Length: 323
Image 1 (cartoon, rainbow, N blue to C red):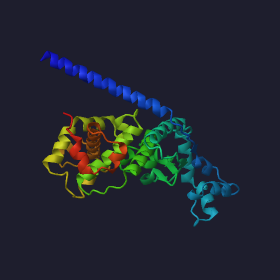
Image 2: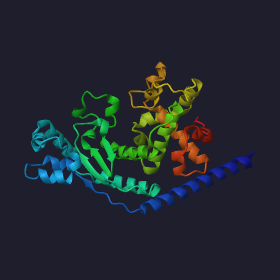
Image 3: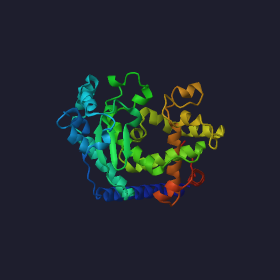
């Protein structure tokens, strides 16, 4: 018996060393990927616009100026007291973007390492009157980031916005939000209407996000506080048992998505003692664990993961929640 235990210990140590060696190899290869990152501060340029230089700015950024508005509209906007206050607050918080530039450089090295066909976008920062539904927009080679949605959860601009939304209006969420946008585009739209199909789709996104941001804390990747992430880790088995016992996996009830997958004040188990403590989006965490288990227990590529259907991933994952 003692020899068996010692053998198992040695095997665990061997597997750990192999894993560390593989991680170091990937890190070394990623570091060699050539990437050029340049953040264009349109927010600053627009704050300094005049009637004289507006035509040049419109020529450089035609996609940010709607043709239906006369030049006078843009000039008046820069004189608006609210816009001027937004510019001042962004100037305080984002006087320098060197930290974000470094993190984006690493992010795009990882993106190009795993998906070489993806090119670095043209990165542009703007103000958007706190349009938190479109904090990050990725379209046609453009990555547009609204800086006024990252001024800090307690900023006065966000009064009246739900607390669970403001939680991620922090500067440190800017790069994770960019990674989320790329992961979402890679996974594509959810086609399986079942709860399991949605779980797996979000799980794929988080798995890819994890690859793209390997050195970032898991809580930050999910947009959780540390205590929220610790709660889902500690209660993984109970969450999974709830889904299974109530036969939710193959359900197509639309209310399951806002209860367990979408942002909200908490996940809705309809159990008073749990709802008081459970963070939102616990289903996303479970999906992440299932996809991670699938990739660990099957010799499949990232490309194969992206096209694999939810039921195949679930059945072949050998997923068992941590106890």
